[in-house]
Length: 351
Image (cartoon, rainbow, N blue to C red; front, side):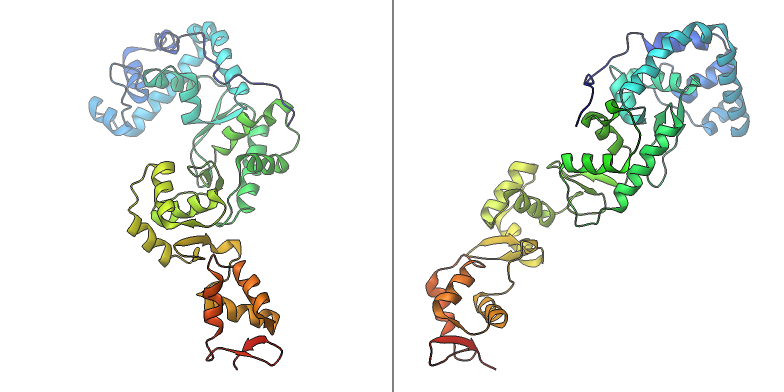
């Protein structure tokens, strides 16, 4: 992926608190107090509701809203705003560097040195008419952008990406980035950088990644792991081959920091159809294609699929499905209730 390198942590050279306070000087006392209370710009960082401010002044919430809106317009027309505009361009450049559209929580966290600064940055974003905010909806988080056309392209690409995934899908980060870029057209090369696309992905409320860094739908238990079964599934998937239930429990504790009792883990593996017992205490994922059932069931399925087979052929095929001793297979073959041997030494099913 060709792209311009973007620094991992650009910082603002100006102090948001100082700039915000200079802008507030353009307001009369009550309007200033309303704005300070609404955006948490005073001693308390807590943002007051319209109702709470209305009770303080004995006015309706709608009147508070009118005062707030008029105050913001007054700031934008003030000399303080004109003098601060050159400073605010730095904030615009930061949004461009981060991808042109970014989730609000991520932008505030990225731009500020701490929680105390975030309210002031949020206020500056509200005041500066260069920025547009779209509120959280069914698909996306609260987000900020400058270029509406770019924002629409990112939104549409994320919708297509979501529609192309099922609850069973788990995709590596590199693959999900490639899939996203396949859905978006005509964007600058620097916006195709992995770090930028990760921020685009973070806009979605419907797509997320699990603790192992694999992406999928938030509705999938493979992404939002909740119980032992889900963590066990991720352990086996990461391991890539059958593993003993004791090792599954150990891996859950190691990878996810969750207490996993061996007996409890084993019981969850037994109950869940996503797992299949393939040996003594060894479990695999059903999606890997292993035949279900005990050894006798596996022999029956092999014969149903292939027809009469010699002892050696049966043993070879069953050992591909189960981690058992050869003698275990041979003992099962002697069960005359299920299997019979012809004069040529081949075994078939009893009808």
